[in-house]
Length: 163
Image 1: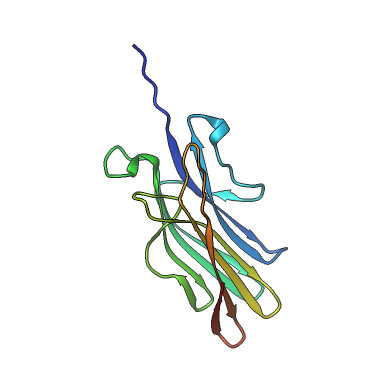
Image 2: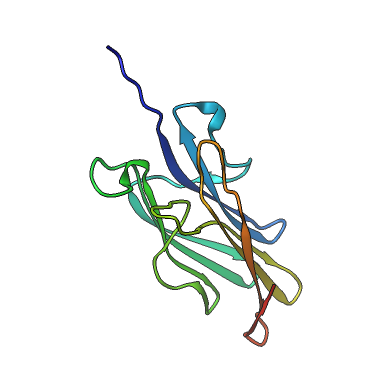
């Protein structure tokens, strides 16, 4: 008898686009059925597994810092079979957007999970958008998305939220 099981491995991809003044973080999924894969768009970098990584994106006078831990599939531990991604810190200049470990593209229970980050520099502001979804599934990929928008005025360093 030959038994096979479906599998999925969660990943993360980033893009620092200096031409368009934006920094984006997106989920990727590699599966045993390639038609279900979610690949990074052109120009994105898939972050390697099994290490702590620091990435810096400079958009003119704006410094974006991302600190992320990416772990590949593990043989033991609840929810570890598909890998784990944790954003430890996301900072724009002196403003923390994420300051404590936050799961990215990895859902363990029925909570929403962070699956997208978009930061765009305009003339005098930085617009950030962070989106959460129900996560990835074989028949329902990243449904029920809700996003939180934040505007950072980097000249006066005042922050304001928008919906």
